[in-house]
Every structure is written in structure tokens, then in C-alpha cells.
Image (cartoon, rainbow, N blue to C red):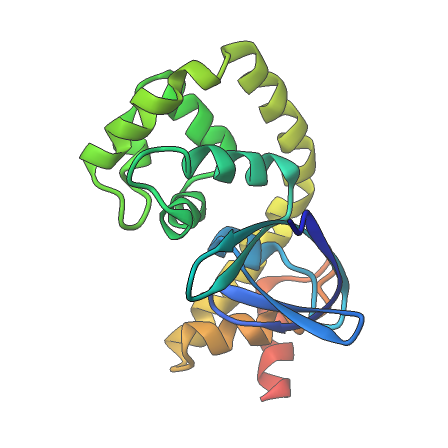
Length: 201
């Protein structure tokens, strides 16, 4: 089992990245939210991973936090949800929001995730509600908030720059790739990021 990969971020695609570790490039599928949080290409990163072994393929799924990996592992225990479905859920809803949605039996919030209907959302609630405690959910949210408040500003700017590039006619994956090549500092605006992207083109 591959618990994590740590190396250079070599390439960023729309729903996966390639991490170079000891001259080997590992293709790792990521939730789209995690792709937006990535540092520029060429940076060192660590991804917590889950290896899916199938007859015809080996698939590696990656996450920026252990919490997201644990949530992914819980989701794939739900009858009818495979790794791709679990990744889809975590692309549409954070681990914290998912925990609270399960505890509140809020199927509508879970059903907002791409490819997840009300029926599957209800199944997630039914099969996972005994796995969460309200106190633990609050503690985890506080830990994650400390991390996410630093990221929130940069994430918002990245998203705006990607949207602006798609409006200009570039594909979402090309836009994302470009934005991830820019070294972003807290004093920059989304316009600054866009200008740097356009200079690279």
C-alpha cells in the first residue's frame, strides 16, 4: 500500500496531477478542490494516497490532508460508491460539511456533489451516521478552519483567474494549469494573477 507520495509537482491536469518521486512520475487523481489549493508546478508536495487495485488497472487517489483521505476511505465503504464517486463527493463538498450533513441527515447538501442523487445521498447518511460524533466533528472543523483561513484568500483569487481565462476562450484544464504555474503571494489580486498568466501565453 502506498500511504503517501512526496516529491516534485511535475504536471497539473483537470482532475489529476503527476508527482515526480525519484525519477518516477506518479499519476494521482485529486478532488478538484485540492487541485485549486496546489502550489506552483515545480514545488515539493506531499499527498496522502489510497491505492485502488483492479484487474485492469492500478489507480492512485490523493489528498492534501489525512482528514480528507479518511473521509474518502469511509465513503468507499458505502454500498454503491466507488473511488471515483467518493472523489466526486469530495470535489463538491468539504469533509467538514459532509460530516455535518450526515449528522444533520441533510441529503440535499450531499446531493449537490456531481453525480450524486438524493437516493445515494440518503444511503451515505444511513451508512455513515454512526461513524461520526458531533463533538469530534466540531473539533475537526476548528482544526481545518485554522488551515483554510490562510488558504481562502489565495483560493478565491485562483478561482477568479481560472474563470477569467475560460471567459477569454481557454479550456478549464489549460486555465488551471496556467494559474498553478504562477507564484502567488498574499498581496496579489486576481488581476495580477491573470496578467502573469497572459504574459506566459
